[in-house]
Each structure stands twice: as structure tokens, then as C-alpha cells.
Length: 205
Image 1 (tube, rainbow, N blue to C red):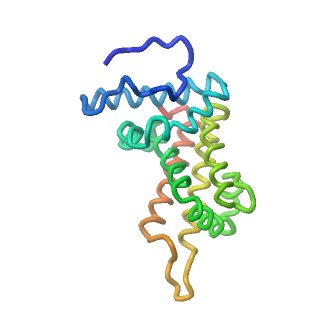
Image 2 (image 1 turned 90 degrees about the vertical axis):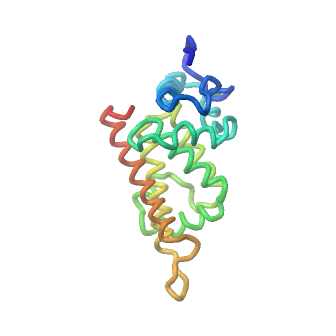
Image 3 (image 1 turned 120 degrees about the horizontal axis):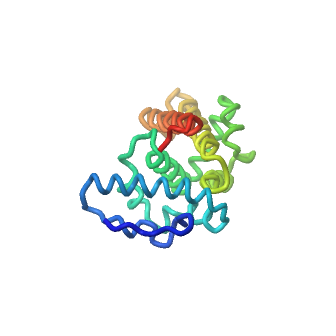
């Protein structure tokens, strides 16, 4: 796999992953995926460019979520690549089903008031407000401290998980989410929070 010379911070988008070929050597693919994650988080943030921030937000659309999955979904949660995958997965879920996201966040925010504040979602938390929040979180990769980005995403996922666990019918049955879905979202929150702690310690790479 050839190396590209970089004279300025990498700007995600514009065929950001062209050099990474699917179906290649798994070790080389993993190395390229890790390198891309580092360039994206460290290089993009160094640019401080609003245009780069917008490219970061829309990377899943420009490159395709399946491309990001192929690169990053198998990466450990306590790595830059793994943290990025979880951030984009969270945004893709909100965009795919914003009404459900809003209902679940609303259900959980009173039971998890501290996490609600950290997440920074407007009140009331409607679908458009949640879309704006997840986009703002991803812009933070360029414009804010990455640990803060991860803390916000973790707090949002935690509130949603609590909402899933507390929404019940009159018969006591959970509405709209299975136990597995709730556990999965709680696990995502915990992974993002752990990655945030690693980033604060300078150990996320």
C-alpha cells in the first residue's frame, strides 16, 4: 500500500479512504484503518477548519457507512478507530430513526439528569434537536477536545439506554426496545466513556 505525502492536515471526505482496498491483507487493512483514524482525529483537529468539520460530520454519507464499518467496526473500543466507529454508529442511528431517538431520550432524561446536561440536547428534545446534537458532537472532533466529544456521546447514549429501560406499557412490558437493545446502548455508552477516560490520560491511539 503506497504512502501519500501530507503537506497539511488530512481533510476527511474527497475519497478519504481511496488508498485502502477492501479484501486486502487484514493486517495492512487494520494498519491503514488505525492510521486513517489518527489522521482524522489528530490532523483534522489541528486544522481548525470549519469546512473540515463539516466533512467530518458527513463522512458516513460521503464514504458510506459500510466503508467505515469495514475499516473500524472490528477495532477495540479503547482505540481511536473504535471510538470513531461508535460515534458514527450513534449518529447513523439517530438519523435513521430520529423520532424513536427523541422518545427514548425524553423518557430517560428525567432519570439521568446529569447525563442529560452533559449530552447538551435542547429542551424539548425533538428529532431535529437530536440530529443537531449528534452533528455538533462530530464537529467537536475538529473544534473541541476529543475527550469532551466522547463524554457527550457517552452521556447521550446513557440517557437513551435509561429511557429504553424505563418505557413501559400499562402491563409493565417495555415498549419500543428489547432488553438486548437496551443493554447494547448501555454498553455503547460505557465504551465511549471508557474511551474518553483513555483520551484524557493520553492513552487513546
